Image (tube, rainbow, N blue to C red):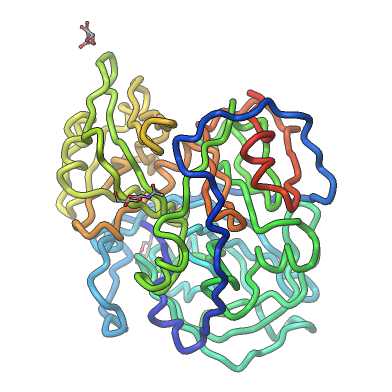
Length: 445
Ligand SMILES: *[C@@H]1O[C@H](CO)[C@@H](O)[C@H](O)[C@H]1NC(C)=O
Ligand SMILES: *[C@@H]1O[C@H](CO)[C@@H](O)[C@H](O)[C@H]1NC(C)=O
Ligand SMILES: *[C@@H]1O[C@H](CO)[C@@H](O)[C@H](O)[C@H]1NC(C)=O
């Protein structure tokens, strides 16, 4: 399933855009691999906020029919529509307290959207029971809730939500730091969506006129720069799952982080998609079936733009490529067009390999993480989308294998193979984060 990226359409009436010009000299162009030897990491001026993530799944094959309500607002058909009808997904959720006194709400951490929306209408949810368990924010019970007298509506890759804007104090992270004035979209009606969504893509600099959670963390001095690191961990637990705002956990990877430039550049994305997301170029794709050599699926000059979307259960590529991967994994399409795989295949020693910056880095996703496990059935981690390049998505079936640093200061996503080796490796990022990430913040595993 996938909750997913908030298309701007419904939000347009409430947005005006403040545009900043990114520094064109950073990050360095790809291919510059010589780094001077690094000194000690200096952490002056930097702080971080750490929050735990919980992996959650909905597995309701029978329910979740999406009606055509409000589709007149949607331009073009969502490539994820077949899965919406299917009603199953795995996401990573973060707990927030909202209001005074704090009311605990869980929201899906979504790098594919950029604002906080809570309390879907559980009657219309893909999984009404799951929906009930994620907490409720009642504005009438909060002495600090402020009605902003505006309405929002948002179309996700799967699902729809509309409601009213409020602002209130939220408490985030393990230390429950108060964040006054956070914009909260409180749903009055939704379809399919079964939990709140915390969007962490670009905020005030590009997509919004107001400060988003990440913007506020910087504005209020909790962190020095609009950067966060994400390690969702292996499927089925056994490794920590967390997000660190303003810092990097060096005990989640080995060696240098590889910078992937946000592309198209934010100003071009705004023109083309009316919003700015974590889009980067994928430069190779291959599969290594168990006991076999790697089969390359792309030519050496392959370059394809993809959206890194933690709100999407699946990775979405074009149908031919998916068919080849499906064949390697003995996957078959069910009556809904969804590729399924025998769950035992998760135990096989194979991988799907995603390359960036022309083989500077290849992230190997083991079958155990790539095959999505819904307990009594399993889906292939990649599903087909149509051929428009803007619809290619790297979802959590990819993200589980990576440690990712989303960097709105340098307009880059820094990446390494996820490899956990401890819990005490956090380095705070300072205003000089670009240099830190390039030279100093190496993995300790
Ligand atoms: C699955 O969805 C249907 C329809 O939305 C709902 O009636 C049913 O209770 C759900 N089943 C579970 C196990 O949540
Ligand atoms: C893998 O490639 C090597 C070198 O090309 C070859 O010798 C070997 O037989 C191949 N292994 C398999 C299982 O195909
Ligand atoms: C991404 O790919 C496109 C198409 O091949 C290319 O024009 C562009 O320069 C690439 N961008 C980056 C940052 O590598």
